[in-house]
Length: 281
Ligand SMILES: C[S@@+](CC[C@H](N)C(=O)[O-])C[C@H]1O[C@@H](n2cnc3c(N)ncnc32)[C@H](O)[C@@H]1O
Image 1: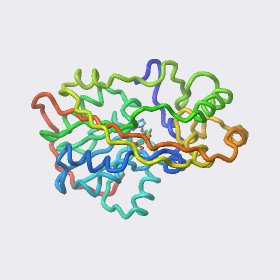
Image 2: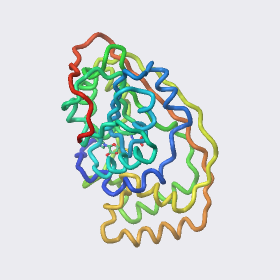
Image 3: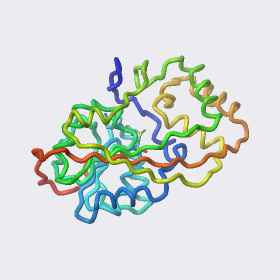
Image 4: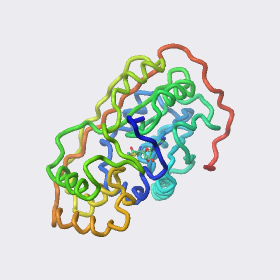
């Protein structure tokens, strides 16, 4: 957990509706690359923790057996269900909850427990220790994220505008992140008993032309500028944001995707899996 910051349920409040439009997709083929690296097949159990609107869950579901998406934000799960319907990906189980609630009734035997841009929001030592016990032999703790590259200049201008409206310190739920979110998950996972990391980079995709609407959605999809933070000044902020963006378009290359895998360093006690998959939350 970030220094001096406490998690609360408003962290991504109102962000879900903006997520799909605002966020850039992971690199083409990243899910197939991940599935091949893990040897996933129709018998594999996969859990996507902090699944948001089902971004990775829905890409992995056709490549695995039982797939579960877990997130504490009910708006994100509603969006995930809608997208599953639209993309005709049946049979995913969506669970409302935090990583800290695991294993809950999910049991063990997972080939992959995935955190795509979500592990930094959790009580990492506690969650890593739990995940280790939820993995099947040969299973892996997986992190998925964007490879950082210099962002187009407009993002710095949006950041300046957000700070003018919300203050200089990055907001997160009802609190603020004085030192940002924590890194060095390699140390956390080593402490928990995982082995060395295996890193795979899936190359970047094409250049896309982003519209002002896309960048407004990007802004509201982020915890640090989620709609709830602006209160009754939301319309004023959006007015200033659109004035800043003008007509666009904003060309941007889809980022490369980084996949990091950690297998358990030694044999550990694992949770038994006895539950049948269902659609309950
Ligand atoms: C940046 S979004 C990533 C969504 C998705 N995984 C993706 O890659 O597009 C982070 C997600 O983590 C979820 N999250 C925040 N704190 C969490 C926690 N303690 N346990 C599980 N998920 C959490 C948020 O609700 C949000 O949906």
